[in-house]
Length: 230
Image: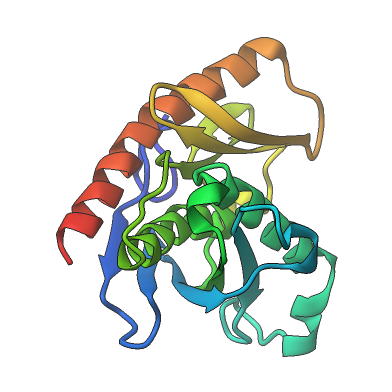
Protein backbone atom coordinates (compact mmCIF):
# COMPACT_ATOMS: atom_id res chain seq x y z
CA UNK A 1 0.00 0.00 0.00
CA UNK A 2 1.35 3.44 -0.93
CA UNK A 3 1.82 5.98 1.83
CA UNK A 4 0.81 9.63 1.97
CA UNK A 5 4.21 10.64 0.59
CA UNK A 6 4.02 7.96 -2.12
CA UNK A 7 6.54 5.54 -0.61
CA UNK A 8 6.09 1.80 -0.44
CA UNK A 9 5.71 0.32 3.08
CA UNK A 10 9.36 -0.67 3.43
CA UNK A 11 10.87 2.18 1.42
CA UNK A 12 13.09 4.75 3.14
CA UNK A 13 12.86 8.48 2.72
CA UNK A 14 15.63 10.24 0.82
CA UNK A 15 18.86 9.97 2.79
CA UNK A 16 21.63 12.59 2.89
CA UNK A 17 24.80 12.46 4.98
CA UNK A 18 26.91 15.56 4.38
CA UNK A 19 30.35 16.05 5.95
CA UNK A 20 32.41 19.23 6.21
CA UNK A 21 29.52 21.24 7.63
CA UNK A 22 31.42 22.62 10.63
CA UNK A 23 34.99 24.00 10.30
CA UNK A 24 35.78 23.77 14.02
CA UNK A 25 34.62 20.33 15.17
CA UNK A 26 36.92 17.32 14.81
CA UNK A 27 34.01 15.53 13.14
CA UNK A 28 30.76 16.83 11.66
CA UNK A 29 27.85 15.45 9.65
CA UNK A 30 24.48 16.81 8.60
CA UNK A 31 22.18 13.78 8.78
CA UNK A 32 18.93 14.11 6.83
CA UNK A 33 16.21 11.46 6.61
CA UNK A 34 13.58 13.08 4.41
CA UNK A 35 12.76 16.46 5.97
CA UNK A 36 14.36 15.54 9.31
CA UNK A 37 17.75 17.22 9.67
CA UNK A 38 20.21 16.74 12.53
CA UNK A 39 23.59 18.44 12.85
CA UNK A 40 26.02 16.01 14.48
CA UNK A 41 29.41 17.25 15.71
CA UNK A 42 32.16 15.33 17.49
CA UNK A 43 34.61 17.09 19.81
CA UNK A 44 37.85 15.52 21.06
CA UNK A 45 38.88 16.42 24.60
CA UNK A 46 41.87 15.45 26.71
CA UNK A 47 40.98 13.46 29.84
CA UNK A 48 38.34 10.92 30.83
CA UNK A 49 35.55 10.80 33.43
CA UNK A 50 36.69 10.07 36.96
CA UNK A 51 35.36 6.53 36.96
CA UNK A 52 37.68 5.68 34.04
CA UNK A 53 40.89 7.22 35.38
CA UNK A 54 43.68 4.65 35.35
CA UNK A 55 41.56 2.11 33.45
CA UNK A 56 43.41 2.43 30.15
CA UNK A 57 40.16 3.39 28.43
CA UNK A 58 38.80 6.51 26.80
CA UNK A 59 35.15 7.55 26.62
CA UNK A 60 32.46 8.39 24.08
CA UNK A 61 29.33 10.25 25.14
CA UNK A 62 26.50 12.14 23.43
CA UNK A 63 24.03 14.96 23.95
CA UNK A 64 20.79 15.40 22.02
CA UNK A 65 18.63 18.51 21.78
CA UNK A 66 16.04 20.11 19.53
CA UNK A 67 16.37 23.69 18.41
CA UNK A 68 13.33 25.81 19.36
CA UNK A 69 11.77 25.82 15.86
CA UNK A 70 12.63 22.26 14.90
CA UNK A 71 8.90 21.53 15.22
CA UNK A 72 5.65 23.15 14.07
CA UNK A 73 5.53 25.37 17.15
CA UNK A 74 8.37 26.87 19.15
CA UNK A 75 9.65 24.77 22.04
CA UNK A 76 11.58 26.44 24.83
CA UNK A 77 15.23 25.48 25.20
CA UNK A 78 14.81 24.54 28.86
CA UNK A 79 12.28 21.89 27.78
CA UNK A 80 15.11 19.95 26.18
CA UNK A 81 16.68 19.33 29.59
CA UNK A 82 13.81 17.00 30.41
CA UNK A 83 13.48 13.24 30.37
CA UNK A 84 13.03 12.66 26.62
CA UNK A 85 16.21 14.47 25.63
CA UNK A 86 18.14 12.71 28.40
CA UNK A 87 16.83 9.29 27.36
CA UNK A 88 17.72 9.87 23.70
CA UNK A 89 21.16 11.20 24.67
CA UNK A 90 21.84 7.99 26.57
CA UNK A 91 20.64 5.87 23.65
CA UNK A 92 22.97 7.68 21.25
CA UNK A 93 25.89 7.40 23.67
CA UNK A 94 25.35 3.66 24.24
CA UNK A 95 25.04 3.05 20.51
CA UNK A 96 28.21 4.95 19.61
CA UNK A 97 30.22 3.31 22.38
CA UNK A 98 29.24 -0.09 21.00
CA UNK A 99 31.15 0.83 17.83
CA UNK A 100 34.40 1.68 19.59
CA UNK A 101 37.16 -0.17 21.41
CA UNK A 102 37.50 2.31 24.26
CA UNK A 103 41.08 1.23 24.91
CA UNK A 104 42.27 2.86 21.69
CA UNK A 105 40.92 6.16 23.06
CA UNK A 106 42.89 5.97 26.31
CA UNK A 107 43.28 9.51 27.61
CA UNK A 108 40.58 11.02 25.39
CA UNK A 109 36.87 11.75 25.55
CA UNK A 110 34.85 12.27 22.38
CA UNK A 111 31.59 14.18 22.84
CA UNK A 112 29.03 13.89 20.07
CA UNK A 113 26.39 16.63 20.00
CA UNK A 114 23.23 15.97 18.00
CA UNK A 115 21.18 19.13 17.43
CA UNK A 116 17.87 18.67 15.62
CA UNK A 117 17.36 21.43 13.06
CA UNK A 118 14.12 20.05 11.61
CA UNK A 119 12.06 17.30 13.25
CA UNK A 120 9.86 15.22 10.95
CA UNK A 121 10.15 11.83 12.67
CA UNK A 122 13.14 9.58 13.27
CA UNK A 123 15.34 12.19 14.96
CA UNK A 124 17.07 9.66 17.22
CA UNK A 125 17.86 7.31 14.35
CA UNK A 126 19.16 10.19 12.23
CA UNK A 127 21.27 11.27 15.21
CA UNK A 128 22.86 7.84 15.65
CA UNK A 129 23.50 7.47 11.92
CA UNK A 130 25.10 10.90 11.52
CA UNK A 131 26.72 10.74 14.94
CA UNK A 132 28.67 7.66 13.87
CA UNK A 133 30.00 9.50 10.80
CA UNK A 134 31.12 12.42 12.97
CA UNK A 135 32.68 10.02 15.48
CA UNK A 136 34.59 8.17 12.75
CA UNK A 137 35.98 11.49 11.48
CA UNK A 138 37.11 12.51 14.96
CA UNK A 139 38.79 9.15 15.54
CA UNK A 140 40.51 9.41 12.16
CA UNK A 141 42.05 12.66 13.33
CA UNK A 142 43.57 10.74 16.25
CA UNK A 143 44.93 8.06 13.93
CA UNK A 144 42.30 5.59 15.08
CA UNK A 145 39.06 4.14 13.74
CA UNK A 146 35.85 2.54 15.08
CA UNK A 147 35.84 -1.24 15.40
CA UNK A 148 32.31 -1.41 14.05
CA UNK A 149 29.99 0.52 11.77
CA UNK A 150 26.54 1.27 13.17
CA UNK A 151 23.36 2.88 11.85
CA UNK A 152 19.78 3.21 13.02
CA UNK A 153 16.32 3.19 11.48
CA UNK A 154 12.73 3.49 12.71
CA UNK A 155 9.75 1.27 11.93
CA UNK A 156 6.19 1.00 13.11
CA UNK A 157 2.63 -0.07 12.51
CA UNK A 158 0.17 2.55 11.29
CA UNK A 159 -3.43 1.68 10.50
CA UNK A 160 -2.59 -2.01 10.70
CA UNK A 161 0.26 -1.71 8.16
CA UNK A 162 3.97 -2.10 8.92
CA UNK A 163 6.10 0.81 7.70
CA UNK A 164 9.80 1.68 7.54
CA UNK A 165 11.32 5.08 8.40
CA UNK A 166 8.24 6.83 9.74
CA UNK A 167 7.71 10.53 9.08
CA UNK A 168 6.00 12.61 11.77
CA UNK A 169 2.49 12.28 10.33
CA UNK A 170 2.89 8.49 10.65
CA UNK A 171 4.86 8.38 13.88
CA UNK A 172 2.32 10.59 15.69
CA UNK A 173 -0.48 8.05 15.12
CA UNK A 174 1.54 4.82 15.15
CA UNK A 175 0.14 1.84 17.02
CA UNK A 176 3.64 0.35 17.32
CA UNK A 177 6.92 2.22 17.44
CA UNK A 178 10.26 0.44 16.89
CA UNK A 179 13.81 1.79 16.69
CA UNK A 180 16.67 -0.46 15.63
CA UNK A 181 20.40 0.19 16.01
CA UNK A 182 22.26 -2.20 13.73
CA UNK A 183 25.71 -3.35 12.70
CA UNK A 184 26.60 -4.94 9.35
CA UNK A 185 25.55 -8.53 8.82
CA UNK A 186 22.14 -8.07 10.42
CA UNK A 187 23.53 -7.83 13.94
CA UNK A 188 21.57 -5.79 16.48
CA UNK A 189 23.10 -3.26 18.85
CA UNK A 190 19.87 -2.12 20.48
CA UNK A 191 16.12 -2.62 20.01
CA UNK A 192 13.53 -0.17 21.34
CA UNK A 193 9.97 -1.31 20.71
CA UNK A 194 6.69 -0.13 22.21
CA UNK A 195 3.04 -0.88 21.66
CA UNK A 196 1.85 2.73 21.71
CA UNK A 197 -1.80 1.87 20.97
CA UNK A 198 -2.15 -1.89 21.13
CA UNK A 199 0.05 -4.96 21.08
CA UNK A 200 2.25 -6.47 18.37
CA UNK A 201 3.15 -10.05 17.59
CA UNK A 202 6.51 -11.83 17.35
CA UNK A 203 5.83 -12.26 13.62
CA UNK A 204 5.36 -8.49 13.19
CA UNK A 205 8.55 -7.86 15.15
CA UNK A 206 10.44 -10.33 12.93
CA UNK A 207 9.09 -8.61 9.79
CA UNK A 208 10.19 -5.19 11.06
CA UNK A 209 13.64 -6.43 12.06
CA UNK A 210 14.07 -8.01 8.65
CA UNK A 211 13.01 -4.80 6.86
CA UNK A 212 15.24 -2.71 9.13
CA UNK A 213 18.21 -4.98 8.48
CA UNK A 214 17.78 -4.61 4.72
CA UNK A 215 17.41 -0.84 4.98
CA UNK A 216 20.52 -0.61 7.14
CA UNK A 217 22.66 -1.82 4.24
CA UNK A 218 21.59 1.27 2.29
CA UNK A 219 22.49 3.47 5.25
CA UNK A 220 25.89 1.80 5.69
CA UNK A 221 26.69 2.57 2.06
CA UNK A 222 25.69 6.21 2.53
CA UNK A 223 27.91 6.47 5.62
CA UNK A 224 30.91 5.05 3.76
CA UNK A 225 30.33 7.40 0.83
CA UNK A 226 30.08 10.37 3.19
CA UNK A 227 33.44 9.53 4.76
CA UNK A 228 35.06 8.95 1.38
CA UNK A 229 33.71 12.29 0.16
CA UNK A 230 35.75 14.34 2.63
